[in-house]
Length: 133
Image (cartoon, rainbow, N blue to C red; front, side, top):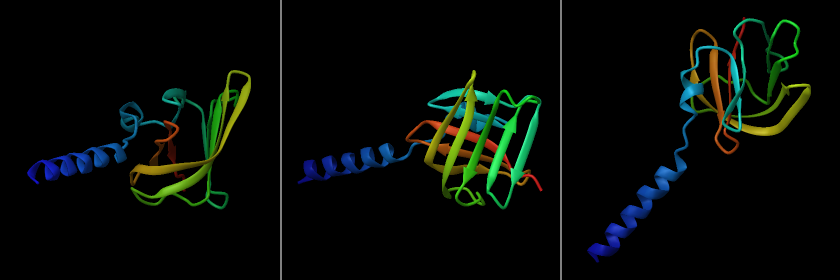
């Protein structure tokens, strides 16, 4: 009986650990607008342009000539940590425009400065965006 209880407890703990998938530590620690796709940083805004459209629920970032850019268009605006949001993502990679539709992002971090950390664990895709007022 005791053996069955220990096995059951171990299975529960293992399942709980499997469910908890955290945002990539590098992106989570980032203090600038950036994009990570499939675990690789593909965009980081050192200098350039930011745009935010509250009506379209869209975040955009790019360098000055927009040759490097990304756009996140959300079904709902992020407002709090833990919220799950479906969004479409578009970004440039070299001369190619890439898209992913229907990603489910979790709001991992939300600061009063407007910075929002979004993470899609299934795709290892994340974005740091900024709500502009």
